Length: 265
Image (cartoon, rainbow, N blue to C red; front, side, top):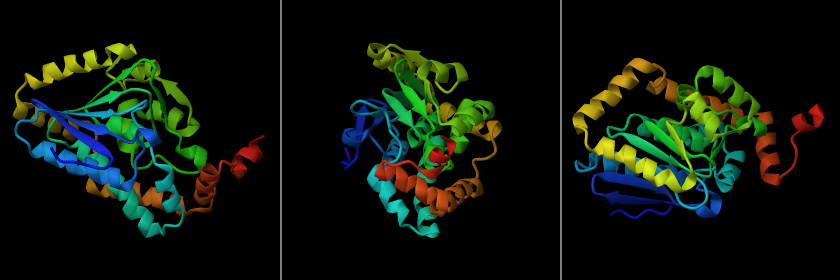
């Protein structure tokens, strides 16, 4: 099995598991991890024996979003560099969404920002009842751009309006009520619930499942075009280099308050 720096690729019979493996930074994304996830996906999608792909996180949480050190680089990026950087994340999410094999997110701890994008790009999402979720981008002057197609699809536009604009945390119970999660369970039953779903999937016809995935994608939402994926990257690139975006990122990294918080007090 291929070795990676920030993920683990595990194969159990016809089940492929991509483990986010950066527990020390709460499995946060950086450019290397994003590239590794895409390579692992390509490998599993080309493997005839694999029938389903699971995304899971090592350690205490599923995924905290962007790595702080990665964010530090963004501060000095040009608009083009920010665009190229964001486009890689957008391509990774889309690669999950259009995967020929069904994808299942196994969520525990929390999934914030890009971590929410990852689970929403998956076909099926299951979490333990203690999991928390947050679209925190606007707190630091950014926008949830590249993840937006998948989050809006999973939460609904109405619920997305609340949680993207307020940046409130919300519970697994609320995520289940809104339809973002398919199942919730007590923590020690998470793997049991995942196994139930995987057992159903692996007993189904592979080509039929692949064609059913495409059927759903083709007839549900129309914004997963190359042009729209590139547009999400362009939007966040412009925001990152804006005065507000620069102030927000720097305030977050330096643990200080941006001016909009001071002005609201």
